[in-house]
Amino acid sequence: MKLSILVNEGPYTHQAADSAYQFTKAALEKGNEIFRVFFYNDGVNNGTRLTVPPQDDRNIQKNWSELAEQYKLDLVVCIAAAQRRGILDEGEAKRHGKGEGAANIAPGFRISGLGQLIEAGIEADRLVVFGD
Amino acid sequence: MPTLHMVNKSPFERNALQSCLAHALDGDGVLLFEDGVYGAIKGSSVSGDVEGKGGVKIYVLGADLGARGIESGRLIEGITVVDYPGFVDLVTSHDRSQSWL
Image 1 (spheres, chains in turn green, orange):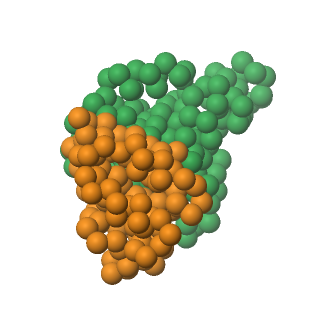
Image 2: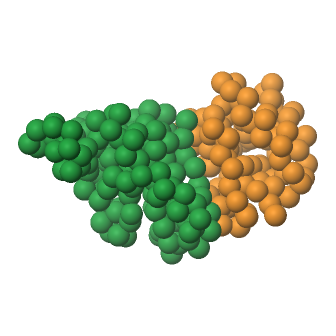
């Protein structure tokens, strides 16, 4: 079955980012297709490459990036939510004059608009929402 | 057209579970996960609400029970413990999922 995932909570907040990751992984391992994972509101904080959790803790951003690489996932961060929280790709960093090396979007993630969430809801058989 | 209701907050923190149970229809399923698993414990001030929904099947995520040290012997009679693959099956076997955030 084709599923889309919406993540509304940041990592290391309560548990929603962990639940969304574990659910997505289990769905893929059972042979389902993940049309898209959309990160909205504080959920965009899952997509910064600058997090440095303790080595004996789970690395939520790295988990997403590795899952994306393994399964060619489409991880989309909402642009308006990302700009407010300082999540930038090369283009956005340049456009806002943030200087060289300011881009911090994690591997496997891309920044796009809310239309991508609407499309994810339309195209998938189920939209599963994780948040606070 | 059964709906899967997903509840991730403790009923002792918010009223999401109570709202959910008030809206759930016969044939629907309710999955308790994250802090929502506290709603699955028998003998609490909210367990009567859960037991009273005869036509609604209640599920609880085993990993989140374990993380909170809740053993299966403490669960309300008739609640089904599922793992993450079981969670996926619940989503695909219901027509839609509703997260009570």
